[in-house]
Length: 98
Image 1 (cartoon, helix red, strand yellow):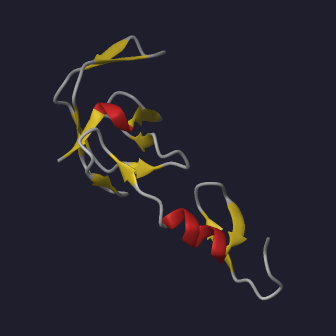
Image 2 (cartoon, helix red, strand yellow):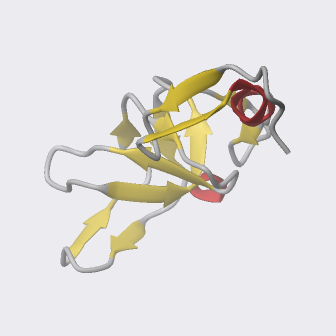
Image 3 (cartoon, rainbow, N blue to C red):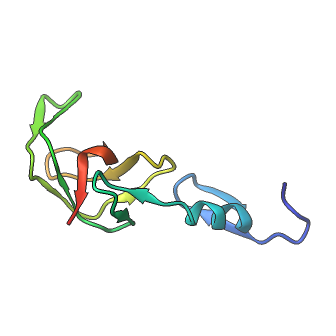
């Protein structure tokens, strides 16, 4: 529940103004890779197994480096870009921090 004096912060992920107290709680969560390393926005990760990409008829090979990841609202998924695949979302269990 938000208070009457609560400050609001613009959440770029959802495009909404949200109470600062909610944003602080979201910022303190921990997202970890397959090895247990802490991930944060902008990190580079390496795939630990071959992954078939649905809808792209392509397989990303083990050892592929993905740069500049972004954390999502889910602790199990990261948003990333690849040269040939736009809007790629990977599960954290298949990546390792570089």
